[in-house]
Image 1 (cartoon, protein in one colour):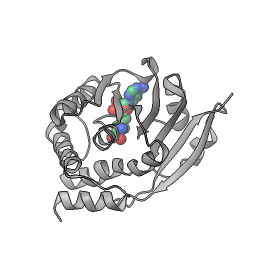
Image 2: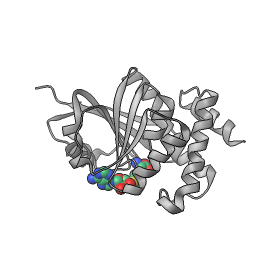
Image 3: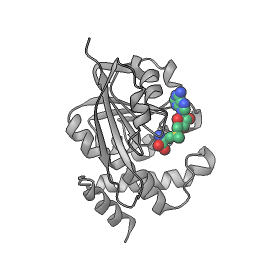
Image 4: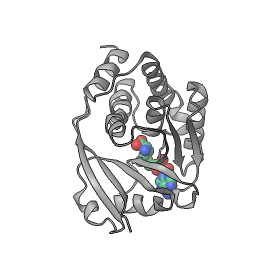
Length: 212
Ligand SMILES: C[S@@+](CC[C@H](N)C(=O)[O-])C[C@H]1O[C@@H](n2cnc3c(N)ncnc32)[C@H](O)[C@@H]1O
């Protein structure tokens, strides 16, 4: 199957209809990751098929849940985004969401800036900072493979709007981490997912600030 057909089929299985532009941009993004991997040290994956399943489809699995949970405009911060996962995929799929991909490593933030310019995504920027020192307010704060849930929430709670939502992409349901989440934070949904082409467990942990 061609990459394009595999991407369309995988997205459809995740409840997402890709238009031609989105499909082109996602594939171009995958190519940029592989092309610049040596310079920016972006991923351990070396072949296009693994980038498609482990990065593009895995990140696309957030899109249908996000449309349900937050259908309108938003400012989203992707913490510890690395090569821009899932932030770049969200920016490609949702032009009504302004995405900031944050990373403590300058080269990774620079790569996201380059992706924004090359793919023509005005709603995407890469920022170099540690999350603990960043200022600002965001409606949505995401992460994938970043930190334990207690550390993710504690490190970014100063950045979440009062009515905002956290979405953490995790592997197996992280029961041990969930038990350690502060009482100031309400985990309101743990959503298990199946990503086409990936045998591994996947889930999204949704949380918000506890009302006073
Ligand atoms: C394992 S990578 C995950 C990258 C990407 N989210 C993914 O799923 O491929 C974790 C990233 O978090 C970044 N990071 C670690 N601590 C951080 C902090 N305190 N603030 C911002 N980024 C941080 C690292 O530089 C690294 O790029």
